[in-house]
Image 1 (cartoon, rainbow, N blue to C red):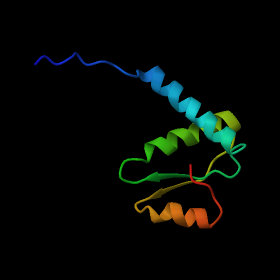
Image 2: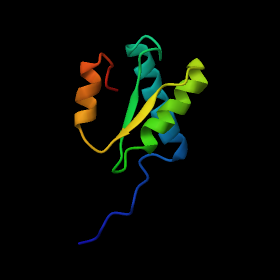
Image 3: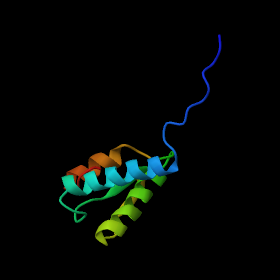
Length: 86
């Protein structure tokens, strides 16, 4: 059986565009960056919130707090403190 040639789904510019739109949606749903805390999972999800954080800084001029977690309990704890998960 022949394998189909590899196909690029998103190039670098496409990924940039998708992440930029996602950042704008996060800001729209939260009415700005004032109450956003980004949490990355230490097993590989640290880069994503760091990118979103830099994008928010460039759009809104606000440094969003950040954290990393090795446990899903951190998100639950944050919710109890009144912060929103992103």
